[in-house]
Structure formats: C-alpha cells, structure tokens
Image (tube, rainbow, N blue to C red; front, side, top):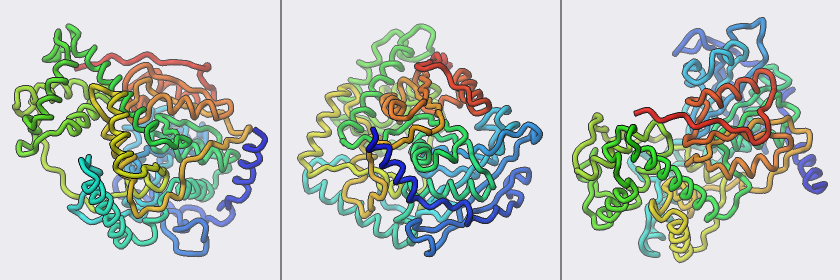
Length: 477
C-alpha cells in the first residue's frame, strides 16, 4: 500500500499543472443557442512538449440559472469514445435536471479528436471494423487493412492522431478548469468518459469537489478474455431479462407465451445456413455474428426491447419491421473511436490460433449469443494497428485523500458490466457504488432513483449508503 501511495504521489508531482499558464476563456454566444456561451482553450498537442504545436479545445457553458445559489462548475463527458459535449451543453435541458441547471455552470467540451477540437479524419468508404476471420490468411489481411487505415488517418489528421489518449484529455480538462478560474470542479463522466474521471481523480484529486462515474470501464483489466467474456456474459444475461419480459402476458410481444430463447436458437441456425437477410437491407445475408450483434444492441437498453420483438418477428417472417426502413448510413471521414480506444487499451493476442481460442472461450460463457460484438470490436479491433498505446492499462493509484466519489452502474449493463464498477469502487478510497437493478447504460436518463441520488450528491456531497440499490424501471411497450 505504501509503495502504491508513494508511486501515486510521484506521478502527481511530475504532472504539469496548467493553472498559471492558461488565459481565461473568451466567451461568445453559441450560434446554435445564444443563451449558451461558446469558447475554446489552447492546449499542447503533446503535453510532454508544452512548447510545441497547439490545438483549440472547444468549450461551451450553460450558466447557472440561479446565480445567487450557484455551487460551481460541473464539467461533464458523455464518453463514446468520441462524443462531443458542446452540442450537449446547448441541449442541456435534455440531459440534466432543472436542479443541476439552476445551481451549476454546466461545462461541456469536445475532446481532442472530436469535430470541433481538431477531429481525427479518416478515408471515407474504408472499413475500420474487425471482421471474424476464418483462416490465418484472412486474419493477416484484416490486420494489414487496419494498419493501412491508420496510416491514412494519420496523414489526413496530422499530429493529433497520435495524441488522443485519455491522459492527454485529462490534462486538457485541467486546463479548462484553470481557464474557468475555478480552484475545484465537479466532474460528471459517463461510460468511456469514466476513464477520464478515474485518471483525473488520480492526477488532480485536489482539484475535485465531486466526481460521478456512471457506467464504469475497468482500466486495470489486462486480459483480453476477461474483457470479452464480461461483455458477452452480460449481454447473455440481458437477453435473458428481455426474454422473461417478452414471454409475460402483459408485454405485448408477438412472442408472448413462447420460449424466446428457442426462437433465437432457431434464427441462429438459419443464419448459420445463410437463410436470413437483414430486413432493412434485403441483399445483406445475416451471419450468426451479425445477429448476435443486433440482439446485443437491442437488449442493452430496456427502452429498445419492443424493437427487438419487432426485429425478431421480421427475421422469422422475413418481412420488413413495422418501423420506417433505415436508410443506408453515409460513410463519414470523422472517426476517432479506434484512435482513442487503442491508445488507451493494449490487448495481447499472439496469433490467429489464440484468436480462435478466445472466440471459443467467449462462446462458452455466452452459449446462446455466442459472442459480444462490442467486445470483439474493442479487443480484436486494436490488433495490428498503427496506433501507439500511450495510456495502457495498469493498477489504479488513487491517493487516500481522493474526494469521495459516486459510482453508478446497472446490474446488467452490456457496455460496461457491473463487475467493472465493483473493481473500480474497491480501489477508490471512500467511494460508494450505487447499483441500478435492471438493464441499461445511462441510468440518469430514465431512472428517477439514480437521478435523485446523483443530483443529491452533486448538490450536497451526500453519498448513498454503501451497497445502495435502485429498483429496475418497468419496461413500457
């Protein structure tokens, strides 16, 4: 414990604090909404070379509507990776409660690599998604394609491509804090943004008034199988919850009264035989992996469960779902996801044979869905890249004087499994984990219980009791 503490103290000591060097933000009305202010903060592209090239980090401020009772600045990050915060600040009422908007200056920013803060640009019409290679040669070609993609992204993006890791964003956030003139900030982070919140708490605990981490990633996790299996296992559990709801008499599901798991098994068998086509794209033949990915998408949020009923019905009948047909998505040249994720995570996979073993091991923990599309993307999608992992996984180094933090996680969170939050919470001194006993990712958006707990903590610093829970919100069709 003493070694970790000393190591943490040394790490904090060598991190440059930009407080004295950052000028105040020059605010102006945002073009989207003139009641919200927009500005920017100049930061080094490479924080190890503060005298080198610089970029502008786009920032927006929704000022507290009750300035007489203003608590301070609440900086937020909605994750992604690659989700910007400027537009969310403009639409703040859609994201945050009236109480928070009354008492806090809400501060959103577009992280480096995101459109308004020197975006990562990549070639249009080129796939950046790892497929499921069947042979060692297919795997080699996939790795070569991902590597070539990165080289072209670097050419199009410039130096920022190699400096979009979360530790760089942590330093950017502290520069924003200094430019705001705040001695301390409150920080709300969601999903991938929890890496930012966790690392900020390690490096700048004295700059934190409050910290909310909702939907946690575990950045101390190093084994590919542990990460992939957690995602796959949680997806399988979430599907089981969907099946229980759908089979009930009051769900309104087409499959009410039936065994939905058997329905999925039958569709998987048809997908293996090449007999299924995507309803929205009739020329696209569905593979078992594609089907698992679509199910994983729908089961991840309870609000999407009626849509999964429609989707499975459409597959069974091979008819278009009742909702409007989805247009073919346009190719985009803004693609920061892999540049950020693979700069933060290193997953060692030696060769194709090990990949095959991983795929089979994941299938063992999720025999019905067989894999996790998001787990595959985040692990296999970082193989062979021309991306330096500047911020690899390591044990956490929280100081004992880190302010008490509130962690929130769904029991069945497909994107950030509950076990990740348990690991982080155990290592954060005085933190409390609030568990939402249902399925979902951003519970603040739909659970009155978690929203009330988060608001109360941010406004008063009062934490829930240890091991507190919130009940699952009923699904509405």
